[in-house]
Length: 486
Image (tube, one colour):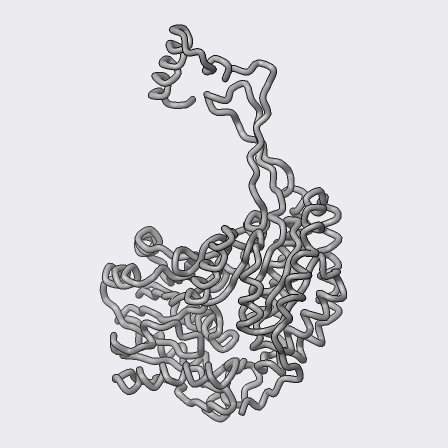
Protein backbone atom coordinates (compact mmCIF):
# COMPACT_ATOMS: atom_id res chain seq x y z
CA UNK A 1 0.00 0.00 0.00
CA UNK A 2 1.24 3.52 -0.81
CA UNK A 3 1.92 5.21 2.52
CA UNK A 4 1.36 8.62 0.94
CA UNK A 5 -2.42 8.22 0.91
CA UNK A 6 -4.20 11.04 -0.93
CA UNK A 7 -6.74 13.23 0.82
CA UNK A 8 -8.66 13.63 -2.44
CA UNK A 9 -9.99 10.96 -4.76
CA UNK A 10 -10.74 11.81 -8.37
CA UNK A 11 -13.91 10.61 -10.09
CA UNK A 12 -14.87 10.91 -13.73
CA UNK A 13 -16.39 14.20 -14.84
CA UNK A 14 -19.88 14.23 -16.33
CA UNK A 15 -19.65 14.22 -20.17
CA UNK A 16 -22.76 16.39 -20.43
CA UNK A 17 -21.27 18.98 -18.10
CA UNK A 18 -18.08 18.93 -20.16
CA UNK A 19 -20.11 19.53 -23.33
CA UNK A 20 -22.08 22.36 -21.67
CA UNK A 21 -18.91 24.14 -20.58
CA UNK A 22 -17.29 23.60 -23.98
CA UNK A 23 -20.31 25.13 -25.71
CA UNK A 24 -20.34 28.06 -23.29
CA UNK A 25 -16.76 28.95 -24.18
CA UNK A 26 -17.59 29.56 -27.85
CA UNK A 27 -19.04 33.03 -27.32
CA UNK A 28 -16.14 33.94 -25.04
CA UNK A 29 -13.59 32.73 -27.57
CA UNK A 30 -15.15 34.87 -30.30
CA UNK A 31 -15.28 37.90 -28.01
CA UNK A 32 -11.67 37.39 -26.92
CA UNK A 33 -10.47 37.68 -30.52
CA UNK A 34 -10.68 41.43 -29.92
CA UNK A 35 -8.92 41.31 -26.56
CA UNK A 36 -5.97 43.64 -26.17
CA UNK A 37 -2.69 43.02 -24.37
CA UNK A 38 -3.78 44.76 -21.17
CA UNK A 39 -6.79 42.47 -20.79
CA UNK A 40 -4.74 39.34 -21.30
CA UNK A 41 -2.02 40.57 -18.94
CA UNK A 42 -4.66 41.18 -16.27
CA UNK A 43 -5.76 37.54 -16.53
CA UNK A 44 -2.16 36.35 -16.25
CA UNK A 45 -1.51 38.50 -13.19
CA UNK A 46 -4.64 37.18 -11.50
CA UNK A 47 -3.45 33.65 -12.15
CA UNK A 48 -0.01 34.46 -10.75
CA UNK A 49 -1.45 35.92 -7.55
CA UNK A 50 -3.66 32.89 -7.04
CA UNK A 51 -0.73 30.48 -7.52
CA UNK A 52 1.31 32.36 -4.93
CA UNK A 53 -1.63 32.47 -2.51
CA UNK A 54 -1.90 28.66 -2.76
CA UNK A 55 1.83 28.05 -2.32
CA UNK A 56 1.52 26.28 1.03
CA UNK A 57 -1.38 24.23 -0.28
CA UNK A 58 0.80 23.06 -3.16
CA UNK A 59 3.61 22.07 -0.77
CA UNK A 60 1.17 19.93 1.19
CA UNK A 61 -0.45 18.44 -1.93
CA UNK A 62 2.88 17.41 -3.46
CA UNK A 63 3.91 15.82 -0.16
CA UNK A 64 0.72 13.77 -0.14
CA UNK A 65 0.81 12.73 -3.78
CA UNK A 66 4.42 11.54 -4.03
CA UNK A 67 6.48 13.05 -1.23
CA UNK A 68 8.09 15.73 -3.35
CA UNK A 69 10.49 17.97 -1.37
CA UNK A 70 9.44 21.59 -0.91
CA UNK A 71 12.61 22.80 -2.63
CA UNK A 72 11.82 20.72 -5.71
CA UNK A 73 8.25 22.02 -5.73
CA UNK A 74 9.70 25.53 -5.83
CA UNK A 75 12.35 24.79 -8.45
CA UNK A 76 10.47 22.50 -10.82
CA UNK A 77 6.81 23.48 -10.39
CA UNK A 78 6.29 27.02 -9.12
CA UNK A 79 9.36 28.69 -10.56
CA UNK A 80 8.81 27.66 -14.22
CA UNK A 81 5.13 28.73 -14.13
CA UNK A 82 5.87 32.07 -12.48
CA UNK A 83 8.74 32.73 -14.89
CA UNK A 84 6.48 31.88 -17.84
CA UNK A 85 3.95 34.43 -16.59
CA UNK A 86 6.62 37.07 -16.02
CA UNK A 87 8.02 36.49 -19.50
CA UNK A 88 4.60 36.72 -21.15
CA UNK A 89 3.57 39.82 -19.21
CA UNK A 90 6.77 41.60 -20.19
CA UNK A 91 6.74 40.64 -23.88
CA UNK A 92 3.08 40.21 -24.81
CA UNK A 93 2.57 43.61 -26.42
CA UNK A 94 5.53 42.94 -28.69
CA UNK A 95 4.34 39.43 -29.54
CA UNK A 96 0.85 40.64 -30.46
CA UNK A 97 2.00 43.30 -32.92
CA UNK A 98 1.26 42.49 -36.56
CA UNK A 99 4.49 41.56 -38.33
CA UNK A 100 4.99 43.42 -41.59
CA UNK A 101 6.55 41.46 -44.45
CA UNK A 102 8.34 42.68 -47.55
CA UNK A 103 6.68 42.18 -50.93
CA UNK A 104 8.01 39.64 -53.37
CA UNK A 105 8.57 40.66 -57.01
CA UNK A 106 5.02 39.62 -57.91
CA UNK A 107 3.55 41.61 -54.99
CA UNK A 108 5.33 44.93 -55.46
CA UNK A 109 2.16 47.03 -55.36
CA UNK A 110 0.76 45.41 -52.20
CA UNK A 111 1.39 45.61 -48.49
CA UNK A 112 1.19 42.57 -46.25
CA UNK A 113 1.52 41.46 -42.67
CA UNK A 114 0.95 38.55 -40.31
CA UNK A 115 -1.64 38.89 -37.56
CA UNK A 116 -1.73 36.60 -34.53
CA UNK A 117 -5.27 35.47 -33.83
CA UNK A 118 -6.33 33.28 -30.90
CA UNK A 119 -7.03 29.74 -32.05
CA UNK A 120 -10.23 29.75 -29.98
CA UNK A 121 -11.20 26.98 -27.59
CA UNK A 122 -8.18 24.91 -26.57
CA UNK A 123 -7.70 21.72 -24.59
CA UNK A 124 -4.66 21.16 -22.35
CA UNK A 125 -4.00 17.58 -21.20
CA UNK A 126 -1.23 17.42 -18.61
CA UNK A 127 0.78 14.47 -17.19
CA UNK A 128 1.44 13.44 -13.61
CA UNK A 129 5.19 13.91 -13.36
CA UNK A 130 5.16 17.74 -13.20
CA UNK A 131 1.44 18.32 -12.71
CA UNK A 132 1.50 22.05 -11.97
CA UNK A 133 4.31 23.02 -14.33
CA UNK A 134 2.98 21.08 -17.32
CA UNK A 135 -0.62 22.16 -16.72
CA UNK A 136 -0.36 25.86 -15.91
CA UNK A 137 2.69 26.45 -18.14
CA UNK A 138 0.73 25.82 -21.35
CA UNK A 139 -2.25 27.64 -19.84
CA UNK A 140 -0.11 30.79 -19.57
CA UNK A 141 0.65 30.61 -23.29
CA UNK A 142 -3.00 29.91 -24.13
CA UNK A 143 -4.18 32.93 -22.15
CA UNK A 144 -1.42 35.14 -23.56
CA UNK A 145 -2.63 34.23 -27.04
CA UNK A 146 -6.23 35.09 -26.12
CA UNK A 147 -7.82 31.64 -25.93
CA UNK A 148 -10.34 30.04 -23.65
CA UNK A 149 -9.20 26.73 -22.21
CA UNK A 150 -10.31 23.46 -20.70
CA UNK A 151 -7.67 21.70 -18.62
CA UNK A 152 -7.42 17.99 -17.89
CA UNK A 153 -4.78 17.22 -15.21
CA UNK A 154 -3.62 13.71 -14.38
CA UNK A 155 -5.84 11.60 -12.15
CA UNK A 156 -2.65 10.25 -10.56
CA UNK A 157 -2.07 13.55 -8.74
CA UNK A 158 -5.42 14.04 -6.97
CA UNK A 159 -4.24 16.45 -4.30
CA UNK A 160 -2.32 18.74 -6.66
CA UNK A 161 -5.24 18.62 -9.10
CA UNK A 162 -7.61 19.69 -6.32
CA UNK A 163 -5.49 22.77 -5.57
CA UNK A 164 -5.31 23.67 -9.26
CA UNK A 165 -9.08 23.24 -9.54
CA UNK A 166 -9.58 25.67 -6.65
CA UNK A 167 -7.35 28.23 -8.38
CA UNK A 168 -9.13 27.94 -11.73
CA UNK A 169 -12.53 28.23 -10.08
CA UNK A 170 -11.44 31.30 -8.07
CA UNK A 171 -9.81 33.15 -10.98
CA UNK A 172 -11.98 32.31 -13.99
CA UNK A 173 -15.58 31.65 -14.88
CA UNK A 174 -16.16 28.30 -16.54
CA UNK A 175 -16.90 29.97 -19.89
CA UNK A 176 -13.31 31.26 -19.81
CA UNK A 177 -11.19 28.50 -18.25
CA UNK A 178 -12.39 25.24 -16.74
CA UNK A 179 -10.66 22.24 -15.19
CA UNK A 180 -12.09 18.72 -15.34
CA UNK A 181 -10.70 15.93 -13.19
CA UNK A 182 -10.97 12.28 -14.11
CA UNK A 183 -9.29 9.41 -15.90
CA UNK A 184 -9.69 7.71 -19.26
CA UNK A 185 -13.43 8.33 -19.62
CA UNK A 186 -12.99 12.06 -19.01
CA UNK A 187 -10.15 12.23 -21.52
CA UNK A 188 -12.24 10.42 -24.13
CA UNK A 189 -15.17 12.77 -23.59
CA UNK A 190 -12.90 15.78 -24.05
CA UNK A 191 -11.10 14.40 -27.10
CA UNK A 192 -14.44 13.81 -28.85
CA UNK A 193 -15.12 17.56 -28.90
CA UNK A 194 -14.07 19.81 -31.82
CA UNK A 195 -11.50 21.95 -30.03
CA UNK A 196 -9.54 24.50 -32.04
CA UNK A 197 -6.24 23.24 -30.64
CA UNK A 198 -5.05 20.46 -28.33
CA UNK A 199 -1.87 20.71 -26.27
CA UNK A 200 -0.86 17.31 -24.91
CA UNK A 201 2.11 16.36 -22.76
CA UNK A 202 2.76 12.67 -22.19
CA UNK A 203 4.09 9.50 -23.73
CA UNK A 204 4.48 8.86 -27.48
CA UNK A 205 2.00 5.98 -27.20
CA UNK A 206 -0.78 8.18 -25.79
CA UNK A 207 0.29 11.02 -28.10
CA UNK A 208 -0.71 8.85 -31.06
CA UNK A 209 -4.16 8.36 -29.52
CA UNK A 210 -4.55 12.12 -29.03
CA UNK A 211 -3.43 12.84 -32.59
CA UNK A 212 -5.87 10.27 -33.99
CA UNK A 213 -8.74 11.81 -32.01
CA UNK A 214 -7.77 15.30 -33.14
CA UNK A 215 -7.71 14.17 -36.77
CA UNK A 216 -11.43 13.38 -36.62
CA UNK A 217 -12.12 17.10 -36.14
CA UNK A 218 -9.06 18.35 -38.05
CA UNK A 219 -7.89 19.91 -34.80
CA UNK A 220 -4.32 21.18 -34.70
CA UNK A 221 -2.08 19.71 -32.01
CA UNK A 222 1.04 20.38 -30.02
CA UNK A 223 2.47 17.12 -28.69
CA UNK A 224 5.17 17.27 -26.04
CA UNK A 225 6.26 13.65 -25.75
CA UNK A 226 9.44 11.93 -24.58
CA UNK A 227 11.72 9.05 -25.39
CA UNK A 228 15.18 7.91 -24.41
CA UNK A 229 17.43 10.98 -24.16
CA UNK A 230 21.11 9.99 -24.55
CA UNK A 231 24.15 11.62 -22.99
CA UNK A 232 27.71 11.47 -24.34
CA UNK A 233 30.79 12.10 -22.20
CA UNK A 234 34.14 12.07 -23.97
CA UNK A 235 37.66 11.98 -22.55
CA UNK A 236 37.96 15.81 -22.53
CA UNK A 237 34.95 16.41 -20.27
CA UNK A 238 35.20 17.82 -16.76
CA UNK A 239 34.13 14.63 -14.99
CA UNK A 240 33.40 16.21 -11.62
CA UNK A 241 31.14 18.89 -13.07
CA UNK A 242 29.50 16.33 -15.34
CA UNK A 243 28.82 13.99 -12.43
CA UNK A 244 27.42 16.75 -10.21
CA UNK A 245 25.16 18.08 -12.96
CA UNK A 246 23.97 14.78 -14.42
CA UNK A 247 23.22 13.27 -11.00
CA UNK A 248 20.99 16.31 -10.43
CA UNK A 249 19.36 16.07 -13.86
CA UNK A 250 18.80 12.32 -13.55
CA UNK A 251 17.54 12.08 -9.96
CA UNK A 252 15.52 15.31 -9.90
CA UNK A 253 11.91 14.23 -9.36
CA UNK A 254 13.41 10.75 -8.89
CA UNK A 255 14.08 10.39 -12.61
CA UNK A 256 10.45 11.03 -13.57
CA UNK A 257 11.38 13.74 -16.07
CA UNK A 258 10.83 13.63 -19.82
CA UNK A 259 14.18 15.34 -20.53
CA UNK A 260 16.19 13.43 -17.91
CA UNK A 261 19.40 11.76 -19.11
CA UNK A 262 18.15 8.26 -19.87
CA UNK A 263 21.47 6.53 -20.52
CA UNK A 264 25.07 7.69 -20.78
CA UNK A 265 27.83 6.85 -23.25
CA UNK A 266 31.18 7.40 -21.50
CA UNK A 267 34.54 7.11 -23.20
CA UNK A 268 36.30 4.01 -21.93
CA UNK A 269 39.36 6.05 -20.93
CA UNK A 270 37.34 7.91 -18.26
CA UNK A 271 34.40 5.60 -17.54
CA UNK A 272 35.62 4.21 -14.21
CA UNK A 273 36.57 7.67 -12.95
CA UNK A 274 33.17 9.05 -13.96
CA UNK A 275 31.31 6.25 -12.17
CA UNK A 276 33.37 6.88 -9.03
CA UNK A 277 32.52 10.59 -9.20
CA UNK A 278 28.82 9.79 -9.62
CA UNK A 279 28.85 7.43 -6.66
CA UNK A 280 30.43 10.10 -4.48
CA UNK A 281 27.86 12.71 -5.54
CA UNK A 282 24.96 10.36 -4.76
CA UNK A 283 26.35 9.57 -1.31
CA UNK A 284 26.96 13.25 -0.53
CA UNK A 285 23.41 14.22 -1.51
CA UNK A 286 21.25 11.34 -0.34
CA UNK A 287 23.31 9.44 2.27
CA UNK A 288 26.28 7.09 2.62
CA UNK A 289 24.28 3.95 3.30
CA UNK A 290 21.19 2.39 1.67
CA UNK A 291 19.13 3.10 4.81
CA UNK A 292 20.19 6.77 4.83
CA UNK A 293 19.27 7.13 1.18
CA UNK A 294 15.90 5.49 1.71
CA UNK A 295 15.07 7.92 4.50
CA UNK A 296 16.36 10.99 2.60
CA UNK A 297 13.87 13.86 2.55
CA UNK A 298 15.47 15.20 -0.64
CA UNK A 299 14.42 12.29 -2.83
CA UNK A 300 10.98 12.28 -4.42
CA UNK A 301 9.19 8.94 -4.52
CA UNK A 302 7.95 7.01 -7.55
CA UNK A 303 4.38 8.09 -8.29
CA UNK A 304 2.72 4.79 -7.33
CA UNK A 305 3.34 1.09 -6.77
CA UNK A 306 2.56 0.14 -10.37
CA UNK A 307 5.26 2.42 -11.71
CA UNK A 308 7.64 1.28 -8.98
CA UNK A 309 7.12 -2.31 -10.12
CA UNK A 310 7.74 -1.27 -13.72
CA UNK A 311 11.08 0.40 -12.87
CA UNK A 312 12.04 -2.53 -10.64
CA UNK A 313 11.25 -4.89 -13.52
CA UNK A 314 13.62 -3.02 -15.84
CA UNK A 315 16.32 -3.08 -13.17
CA UNK A 316 15.89 -6.80 -12.44
CA UNK A 317 15.86 -7.70 -16.12
CA UNK A 318 19.14 -5.85 -16.70
CA UNK A 319 20.84 -7.48 -13.70
CA UNK A 320 19.61 -10.94 -14.65
CA UNK A 321 21.11 -10.47 -18.10
CA UNK A 322 24.52 -9.47 -16.72
CA UNK A 323 24.45 -5.76 -15.78
CA UNK A 324 26.50 -4.75 -12.75
CA UNK A 325 25.00 -2.53 -10.05
CA UNK A 326 27.68 0.08 -9.26
CA UNK A 327 25.57 1.82 -6.61
CA UNK A 328 21.98 1.59 -5.43
CA UNK A 329 19.71 -1.23 -6.55
CA UNK A 330 17.46 -1.30 -3.46
CA UNK A 331 13.70 -1.43 -4.09
CA UNK A 332 10.69 -1.16 -1.78
CA UNK A 333 7.50 -1.55 -3.81
CA UNK A 334 5.17 -0.83 -0.88
CA UNK A 335 6.84 2.53 -0.19
CA UNK A 336 7.26 3.40 -3.89
CA UNK A 337 11.03 3.55 -3.44
CA UNK A 338 13.84 2.78 -5.85
CA UNK A 339 17.33 3.85 -4.77
CA UNK A 340 19.44 6.09 -7.02
CA UNK A 341 21.08 3.40 -9.12
CA UNK A 342 23.91 3.25 -11.63
CA UNK A 343 24.37 0.24 -13.89
CA UNK A 344 27.46 -0.76 -15.85
CA UNK A 345 28.03 -3.46 -18.46
CA UNK A 346 24.37 -3.47 -19.47
CA UNK A 347 23.83 -6.02 -22.26
CA UNK A 348 22.31 -4.81 -25.51
CA UNK A 349 19.24 -7.03 -25.11
CA UNK A 350 18.25 -5.58 -21.72
CA UNK A 351 14.83 -3.91 -21.85
CA UNK A 352 16.21 -0.90 -19.98
CA UNK A 353 18.11 0.11 -23.13
CA UNK A 354 14.98 0.11 -25.30
CA UNK A 355 12.25 1.38 -22.95
CA UNK A 356 12.08 4.87 -21.45
CA UNK A 357 13.12 4.37 -17.83
CA UNK A 358 11.32 7.28 -16.12
CA UNK A 359 12.89 6.39 -12.81
CA UNK A 360 16.16 6.64 -10.83
CA UNK A 361 18.16 4.01 -12.72
CA UNK A 362 21.00 5.13 -15.00
CA UNK A 363 22.78 2.76 -17.43
CA UNK A 364 26.41 3.56 -18.31
CA UNK A 365 27.76 2.38 -21.68
CA UNK A 366 31.47 2.50 -22.46
CA UNK A 367 32.61 3.52 -25.94
CA UNK A 368 35.80 4.17 -27.88
CA UNK A 369 34.50 5.42 -31.25
CA UNK A 370 32.19 8.45 -31.39
CA UNK A 371 30.97 7.45 -34.86
CA UNK A 372 29.60 4.20 -33.42
CA UNK A 373 27.77 6.14 -30.73
CA UNK A 374 26.22 8.48 -33.30
CA UNK A 375 25.13 5.52 -35.42
CA UNK A 376 23.44 3.88 -32.41
CA UNK A 377 21.61 7.09 -31.51
CA UNK A 378 20.43 7.49 -35.10
CA UNK A 379 19.19 3.90 -35.15
CA UNK A 380 16.64 4.74 -32.44
CA UNK A 381 13.62 7.09 -32.49
CA UNK A 382 14.57 10.77 -32.28
CA UNK A 383 14.83 11.74 -28.60
CA UNK A 384 13.44 14.80 -26.86
CA UNK A 385 16.89 15.79 -25.57
CA UNK A 386 20.53 15.02 -26.23
CA UNK A 387 23.41 15.97 -23.92
CA UNK A 388 27.07 16.26 -24.90
CA UNK A 389 29.90 16.71 -22.41
CA UNK A 390 33.10 17.59 -24.23
CA UNK A 391 35.62 20.38 -24.71
CA UNK A 392 36.55 19.06 -28.13
CA UNK A 393 34.72 21.38 -30.53
CA UNK A 394 35.06 18.91 -33.40
CA UNK A 395 33.36 16.17 -31.41
CA UNK A 396 30.57 18.50 -30.28
CA UNK A 397 29.97 19.73 -33.83
CA UNK A 398 29.94 16.19 -35.18
CA UNK A 399 27.36 15.04 -32.63
CA UNK A 400 25.11 18.08 -33.07
CA UNK A 401 25.26 17.98 -36.87
CA UNK A 402 24.83 14.24 -37.38
CA UNK A 403 22.03 13.57 -34.88
CA UNK A 404 18.46 14.81 -34.50
CA UNK A 405 16.69 15.60 -31.23
CA UNK A 406 14.21 18.05 -29.83
CA UNK A 407 16.95 20.01 -28.07
CA UNK A 408 20.64 19.81 -27.18
CA UNK A 409 22.68 20.86 -24.15
CA UNK A 410 26.47 21.09 -24.32
CA UNK A 411 28.20 20.60 -20.95
CA UNK A 412 24.87 20.90 -19.14
CA UNK A 413 21.45 19.24 -18.93
CA UNK A 414 17.77 20.21 -18.62
CA UNK A 415 18.49 23.88 -19.31
CA UNK A 416 16.85 23.81 -22.74
CA UNK A 417 13.53 23.38 -20.93
CA UNK A 418 13.83 26.48 -18.74
CA UNK A 419 15.35 28.86 -21.32
CA UNK A 420 12.38 31.11 -22.04
CA UNK A 421 13.73 32.41 -25.35
CA UNK A 422 14.21 28.96 -26.86
CA UNK A 423 11.57 26.70 -28.41
CA UNK A 424 10.92 23.60 -26.36
CA UNK A 425 9.62 20.57 -28.22
CA UNK A 426 10.43 17.24 -29.74
CA UNK A 427 10.78 15.90 -33.25
CA UNK A 428 8.70 13.06 -34.69
CA UNK A 429 8.44 10.38 -31.98
CA UNK A 430 9.40 12.85 -29.25
CA UNK A 431 6.90 15.51 -30.19
CA UNK A 432 5.28 17.89 -32.65
CA UNK A 433 5.39 21.66 -32.26
CA UNK A 434 7.00 23.92 -29.68
CA UNK A 435 6.15 25.67 -26.43
CA UNK A 436 7.44 28.25 -23.94
CA UNK A 437 7.70 32.00 -24.29
CA UNK A 438 7.09 33.42 -27.74
CA UNK A 439 6.98 29.91 -29.17
CA UNK A 440 4.19 28.96 -26.78
CA UNK A 441 2.29 32.11 -27.75
CA UNK A 442 2.60 31.13 -31.41
CA UNK A 443 1.57 27.54 -30.70
CA UNK A 444 -1.77 28.82 -29.42
CA UNK A 445 -2.12 31.45 -32.18
CA UNK A 446 -3.22 31.29 -35.78
CA UNK A 447 -0.69 33.16 -37.90
CA UNK A 448 -3.11 34.87 -40.27
CA UNK A 449 -1.81 36.22 -43.57
CA UNK A 450 -3.21 39.62 -44.60
CA UNK A 451 -2.60 41.26 -47.99
CA UNK A 452 -3.79 44.76 -48.84
CA UNK A 453 -3.93 45.89 -52.46
CA UNK A 454 -2.98 49.38 -53.60
CA UNK A 455 -5.04 51.40 -56.06
CA UNK A 456 -2.63 50.25 -58.77
CA UNK A 457 -3.61 46.61 -59.20
CA UNK A 458 -0.97 45.09 -61.46
CA UNK A 459 -2.69 41.73 -61.28
CA UNK A 460 -5.12 43.10 -63.89
CA UNK A 461 -2.40 42.45 -66.44
CA UNK A 462 -3.10 38.76 -65.97
CA UNK A 463 -6.88 38.95 -66.40
CA UNK A 464 -8.56 37.44 -69.51
CA UNK A 465 -9.06 37.85 -72.37
CA UNK A 466 -5.55 36.65 -73.16
CA UNK A 467 -4.71 38.71 -76.21
CA UNK A 468 -1.20 38.79 -77.66
CA UNK A 469 -0.01 41.70 -75.49
CA UNK A 470 -1.13 39.99 -72.27
CA UNK A 471 0.35 36.65 -73.29
CA UNK A 472 3.62 38.46 -73.93
CA UNK A 473 3.56 40.07 -70.48
CA UNK A 474 2.82 36.72 -68.84
CA UNK A 475 5.66 35.00 -70.76
CA UNK A 476 8.09 37.79 -69.82
CA UNK A 477 7.05 37.44 -66.17
CA UNK A 478 7.57 33.68 -66.21
CA UNK A 479 10.96 34.08 -67.93
CA UNK A 480 12.05 36.60 -65.29
CA UNK A 481 11.72 33.91 -62.60
CA UNK A 482 15.09 32.44 -63.57
CA UNK A 483 16.84 35.53 -62.18
CA UNK A 484 17.60 35.65 -58.45
CA UNK A 485 15.74 38.11 -56.22
CA UNK A 486 17.70 41.18 -55.22
